[in-house]
Each structure stands twice: as C-alpha cells, then as structure tokens.
Image: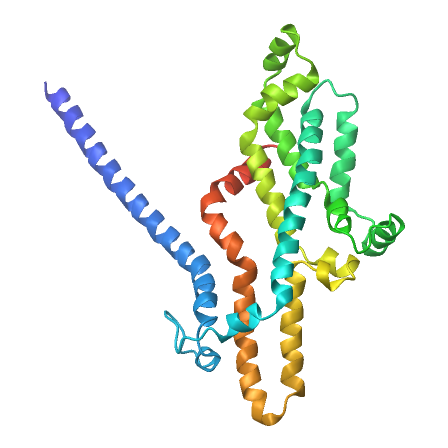
Length: 307
C-alpha cells in the first residue's frame, strides 16, 4: 500500500514538473518568435511609414513607430510616369508566361528523373547538378541569345531560365517520396500508359509541389531585372524593376542639375520616391506571402530531406 501511494505521488510530481517545463518552453518559444517577428517585420513597416513621411524627419530619426507629416508626393510622382503602368503590365506578362514555360518543362522532367526504370537517370542528374556549380558565364550566354535572334524579345527573359536545377531536384525528390512504385504497377495492370498515369494520377497527387514550384518561379520572374538589362533595348518592353530604376536615376540626375534653390526640394522628393519605389515593387509579393508562406516552407523541407 505504501509503495502504491509513493508511486502515485511520484507520478503526480512528474506531471507537475513536466507541465511547468512545458510552460517554460512555450513561453521561451513565444518570446523568441516575437523577437524574430519584430526583426523581420519592422524594416518592412519602417519603409511603409517612411514612404509617406517627411524625409527631413526620417533622416532626423523622428520616424519610428508612426509617420510624421504625412505626404503622398512620392507616390503621386511615381504614378505620373506612364512607363510605370507599362512596366507593371510587362512584368505580369513575363511572370505568367515564364512560369507556364517553367512548369511545362520542369514537372515532366522531374517525374521522369524520379522513375527508377529511366535508363541513365544518374548520368542526367549529374549533368543537371553540374550546372548548379559551373556555367558558361555572361558573355557566352549573351552571344547565344543574340545568335538565336532573341535579343529585345520576351524569350530572352524566359528561355535562358526555363528550368531551375534546384527546383528540378526538389520536384524529383517529391515524386520519389510521394508516388510509390506499387501505384504505377497497379495502373499498368489496369492498362494505363505512362502518359495516362502521369496525367491522371501523378498530377492530381502532386498539387502541393506544383504550388511550390509556381511560387518559386513566379517570385524569381517578378524580382528579375538583370536579364532585361542585358537583353532588352526597347524601353516599352522594360519590366517594372527597370522602370523603377529609371525613375530613381532620373530623379538623381535632377538633383545634380537643378539650381540651389530647388535642390532641397528635389532631394526631399527623391527620398520619397526611393521609399515609394520599394513599396510599389514589393506590394504584390507582400500581399501574397502571408497566404502562401506554408507552400514555400514545404518546398524547402522537401529539398532538405533528400537531394
């Protein structure tokens, strides 16, 4: 009887101790996550309030938690540029078309490389991995794009980045871990061809990785500007990133050529435009990220499990 009572008391103490430890652990987690949230979120918040505050107060350190002397002059100046809307339209088109091309090429290739009956798949994977480490460089790539007559066309921004080796490996890993061989054998017994199996079974089961790839590729196209800077000559074809760069450069030139009386006003407007440009280029992604973040995390974890 005594041993039973001692055992019950020890069990209760263990439960109390475990509960307290769990509470401490949870509190520490909340504290650490809150600090991480502030470190990540505050710079974004500061850019927002700085874009509508007086630059003099921003530079003086008076803007910290809320905007000071609210003004929308920077946004008005940005919207005055007709090329701003053209750049938005071009970027949306490049992102949509480029992502479609990426998906059409990446998903079937990744599935094929995940099949154990593909002859030479290790050799192909070695070649694909090799391109992640070594490349031809900028000048050979430019010469190739020029010889293919893709300069100053949309294809110069899409074809050179049609397949990402990293995304291909992530998708292949997903197929290897998610699509069992028994499922393929059962489909073949029912008379399904490889194409039918891929279209009717693999694709519906692979929507998570498809969502991940779409997000990865779309974000990459939206933020890309270097290829447009190298290959595009017509300003009407510039993506948003280059248009915003041109706006910043133009206002910087105005700062240098205006007389002393207007210099302070031009510098003030230039600072407002600088912050406004950051918000204008990041706004679509800032809106989408909270809703789609779990897909990005899932994609990163898939690639981290097995290469």
